[in-house]
Image: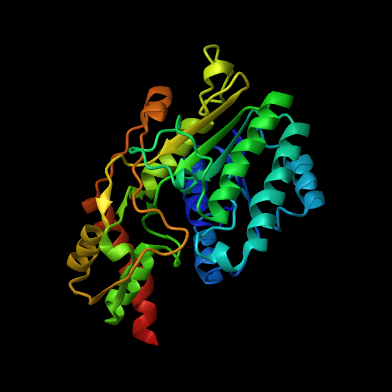
Length: 340
């Protein structure tokens, strides 16, 4: 395959591109290298890809429709994995405009380019945050997700709706992937595991929201990438059993699918912190605080639909995942800290 991977300098994007290249595919990577978080980390990720046979990189914003159209004309990708987005729930409270541009305008441009070019399949990142106020556990792709509690979640739900319209109107095969609490080596500095590690190593108190009563379906990056690769090679087809009178939101009479990509084993937040403390060999003071705006108390993925369709089965336990994450964190950050 020749695969366009957007957000290729991002956490999931870089690992996905590396796996595609290792499998012998060609990858056209796009990123805008914005400064939402440390650009040096993004460049370090890209350094792992650059120079590999079959990898091409272009740097620009996907909101630039002309540049994106030119890229499609030049490279003619047959599959698209759209992972670029403005991430972060809390950042959306203070910078809503970034989410409109990066998550809505850019996605509309991607859809238009896929529509006008012979793309076999568009797989794109959604998020477990779309479940919002839904209280039913585990979260199923057949559940209603009409009550997001952050603008970030609303943009991800909007992406799913936009994709369905294009699947219906133009028979464009699209698959939305709702990722659950991704963690692992090369993760984002604004995510909880990185924040926790930094504060534990610095001996700083750790703010623990919802008084530590969160449960999260922590999913190791390798399992996320495995889910993506399994899906991208299986473009959806119309569901012949789809019933408009009892509409299942996870499929359609159009070539459209939604899947959860998670671990199916929610972990208590305090247990996750305990595992970090054990691996780092330090304990941290915990300041218990109320729930933050935009947060949900628990996430728990039902991946039965993805398992049935692709054979997906998450393999990395929380103990192994934390060990591998912390080992990378110490190797990447501590040499820098020791020189400063």
